[in-house]
Image (tube, rainbow, N blue to C red; front, top):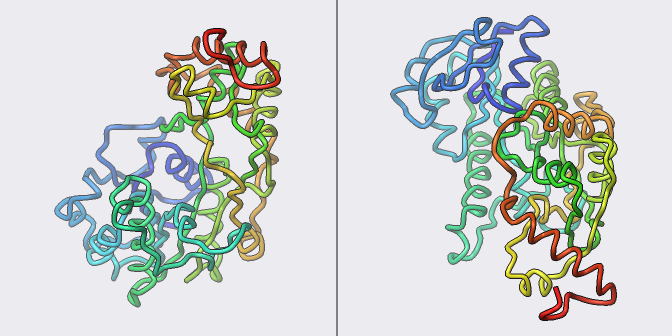
Amino acid sequence: MNVLVLGGTTFFGRAIVEQLLTRGDEVTVFSRGNTRPEWWGNVGHVNGDRANSTSLEQLRGRAFDAVIDNIAYTGADVDMLLNIIGPSIGHYVLTSSSAVYNTARGFPPYDEDDVDRSFRPPAEKAASPGWAYTIGKLTAEQVLIDRDDVVWTIIRPPIVLGPNDPTLRGWFYFQRLLDGGPLLFRCCAERSFRIVYSEDLARGYLGALDTPVARGQIYNITQQEVVRMRDFLAAAADGLGVPLDIVDITVRDLAHMALEYSDPYDRLSNFIPSVERAERDLGYVSTPFKDWVGETARWYRDRYDGADSQGYEARDDEILLARGLRSYPGGSVKPGEE
């Protein structure tokens, strides 16, 4: 295939391009050119800004069998691109987000039809970053669904983890495991969820490109296993060859220590998107959870050389709090005795 990828130089967009190249597809990347992976010489490149219509005009008239758009955040973004290239492309794949299930009614597992497209948050919440992102992705989906001039597929990833993750959410846990200190968790790390490995997500996109029945469909692409936070941490610890040490905390404990502590997966409580449609239509099978989490943790240990993780400057206070809690196993740290 001749494939255009918008947002193809970092994280799972990079993994998509690598998998396309490996199987012999012709790839063009639309980006600002600031990040140039090792395969840069093997792809075409259009230098531009996704949010700038003048930049996108460079694509007018160019024919592509497929377009993968990882960086459309609103309905206006989708329309701006498709008004330019819609007539000359075969298949448009939009990266949405499982954040749209913030509008869902009912209980998990959430399938692709569980989104309430009419839902809008109260005015006082609508401008918050989380809701702005959710509604932006929801409107991007709706604009695409309402168009009749393009063949489309929508992919909804949950939280994505793997090498080269610019969010560094996984590094939060891996760095703390590597320093040997305890990890603090509410609810004893029993929250259950599904996330996805970046390489598995990329394979989901290729499956959607290759499968005629995927046209006009929406897919959750996630890991197949439902795991607890404790399982995630145990897989990472095992992959790193270090012990796992978890200490339960409460909001009161944090307030007493004046410690602003929130692990990045804190909100993943029973967040379980259904993956049945992808299994059925695309033949999707995810990498065993323990394998890819351990491999990812080792990548950070052996190859990552960037900044510390979120909140790591207060790591000594985290450890102090954990020791205090261990001293008083029947309750929270007592004032003046931490």
